[in-house]
Length: 343
Ligand SMILES: Nc1ncnc2c1ncn2[C@@H]1O[C@H](COP(=O)(O)OP(=O)(O)OP(=O)(O)O)[C@@H](O)[C@H]1O
Image 1 (tube, rainbow, N blue to C red):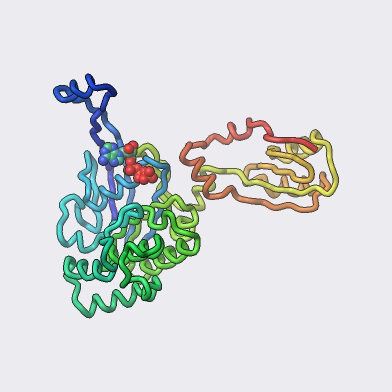
Image 2 (cartoon, protein in one colour):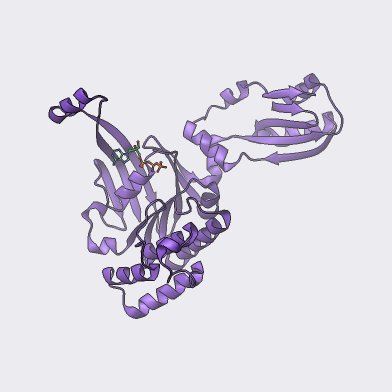
């Protein structure tokens, strides 16, 4: 459904030097520098999949989304979206695609959202019965009956974002690009948006590429993620494998019933193949390669006066942070010293 090969976008940015003389000189002699916002990426997304698109600020996510929806022309590489070449902007393509940008509004501020929807009905030539049925669907799914007839400027951020989604999806696109759709929303509203995105994907077999800085969005909606940084694709695969790849460790949190000397604790942890992260009686935190966690836990239970033990995966946030930093060498992790030790 979405096919991208060697996709590259280089922006040419005018370099402005400080000072009046430099500004005058730049009238005759302009200097430019290149920004490789997207740098030779490849991926394929089959029909109906929701894929998370992750990367730190400035990684190239929005640029990729704009390339995939035809708002930008690539510098090089190939893109096919639903069989179309996006930048050719064919009408048949425009009827199947939508880009929602959480930071940008397409609603008209001074009129109710319902009137913007009517404009979209005309632009996309939606038949009246279809229009009615779609408005009913969205109103029910997003709980919008008390909202769509108020002027947009009176709506809360969450209400406005729901209306933005309706405006973007009224023509029922099956190729949907969501750029931070839940930005700034409270947890309940984020949850409502997630439920809606999931239903839309299921009801209309929509293929969805989603960027979000909220890992809860990504883990609730996407089995697969693409991770990009500096315009290059770092990872393409299942979220579960992302954790294995970038964080091959688990944490064991223990509570001790009696104080034990730090050297004894450290020796017990080391002999089980673990690394002591911190020990401040009664709390003890240990890190170990995934495959050693069971053996290490058993060893700690027998050699220390443990009253509580929990094994945790690192949070998705921290794994993503490691992926961005491309921390892949477990040896470096092993070499780190314990952060804090004290009985
Ligand atoms: N129109 C433009 N002209 C020049 N450079 C640009 C332009 N748009 C984006 N860039 C640069 O391209 C790089 C990628 O930007 P992009 O907006 O795609 O990143 P992003 O991953 O969406 O970031 P964020 O999470 O902050 O929205 C950045 O270095 C940015 O400064």
